[in-house]
Image (tube, rainbow, N blue to C red):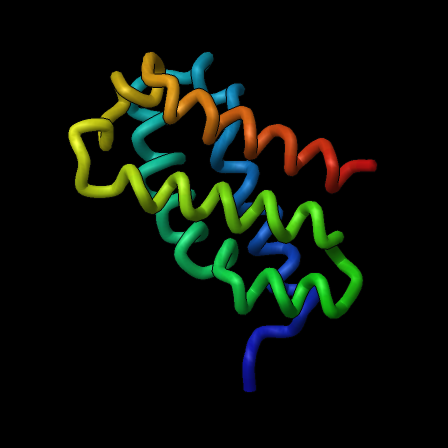
Length: 112
């Protein structure tokens, strides 16, 4: 038996909480843990199109949120195994800034 859609939603929201502009106020170690451990694992599973489809079908997220979440996952995965896969880049690079802001935007849409 799989994970319930309600539990998927919890994991989805928890994943989004690990990424956002609020990280920039944290220590390097906290950024590293949140982005490169917690968000990394969650993005693979809980921002996956299959998960987003289930959440959308259950009317837990909108088409807009689903699309933005898919874009967020793609942008994040694109940076893996690049020279930008480090805390300094998270703090200073435009690509990371877009990812952090997109996560914030998705979270604000969820709270409407």
